[in-house]
Image (tube, rainbow, N blue to C red; front, side, top):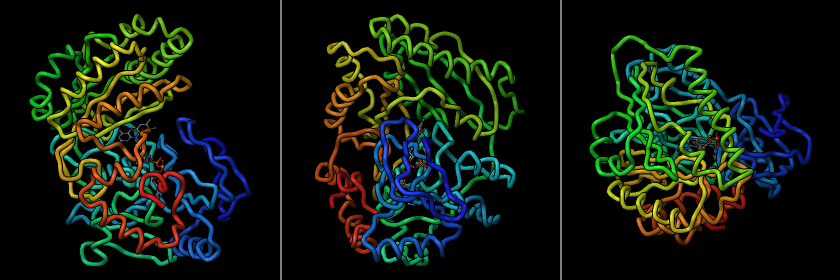
Length: 444
Ligand SMILES: Cc1cc2nc3c(=O)[nH]c(=O)nc-3n(C[C@H](O)[C@H](O)[C@H](O)COP(=O)(O)OP(=O)(O)OC[C@H]3O[C@@H](n4cnc5c(N)ncnc54)[C@H](O)[C@@H]3O)c2cc1C
């Protein structure tokens, strides 16, 4: 990630430059610090707050918003990583908040466990993913924050606070998705499940047919999603279902060609041509996967997450599930009317509703519509037009993806908003954990 370099001794030079994965957020933190344990972490926060400095924990910088940016003290939790405890009776694991999902998944697998659902990459840290309401797809499953059973955080007073059902339950209840605004989380206990295999079936369908039967498809498969390829009538559907069948992974070379080469290098080349000559985009779109299908069986975490080498900007909103077809039809009509040239698929996923106060799926079964623009191409007019349409469907923006909403509008979308703000006032009255993003989305 840019020039972030953690210091083993805990503190790094002044005015480092930090960039997020997409390269659309740049910050110059006064220091980048890597505490070795929660006691050191608490000391950093107490020191910063006594000096009126800002503190911001950063994960792997995979948010498209400035959620993790700071010109204050940036905290990296590389040392707070790995599994520290497994409760075999409950299938629960305690993990360092800085653990990358790509490290956690094989560690869990070695314990015979897995997370029930994941997003489509595994580069994020556990804390970063949970804090922005990161989710995958699966009508009967929540996002990652719904799998948190306990967490430890350092609040704005520099105190270490353990939160579980039996201690500080109110913080756990309201604060699982917090965009870093309540404190620095050092550890989570997560509900896992016995490790499992998935049979993946990837198959193109006509978009109109998918929209007609989206609810049935989502209900019929453990993990259903689809990608509409703009400028075509086609959508690529992905159905992942639990299976006890033997592993049948994509053969190594074929897998590399299809997953890494075709979905990244070849796709990246098409995107570059499209960026240089946008008028070719509709013709290039026909080269995207809209014919042929493939089927394979692998461990769940290997199927959920794929490599992402092509960089882009993304906006994603959660809608009440019944709104997905009309909303997508409206977006398609708008794209045609305005003549936008889009060289990235539009992704649609589904999750169960949950009880996490600032989860994008709070209190309602949700469908997610995500739009992408290749890095270096203008995204704002298109994203704003999409957002305007989705506003009409009561849509909630992903905290880690581009959006243009502010506190007043967001507050009306979350029934427990005031509980979150009250908790923030209690845990961080001096706003040690604030940055420009939290000022915008939560207020000062
Ligand atoms: C290629 C790509 C694919 C993606 N796929 C998906 C997907 O499938 N589903 C989905 O929902 N999202 C997806 N995302 C979005 C991504 O999951 C979120 O933006 C996530 O927050 C990134 O995690 P991170 O570790 O990079 O956190 P960062 O982006 O570094 O930080 C995110 C937020 O978490 C806070 N934070 C980090 N660590 C801590 C801590 N220890 N204590 C308190 N706060 C902390 C930060 O301050 C910040 O506010 C994707 C993003 C990219 C770039």
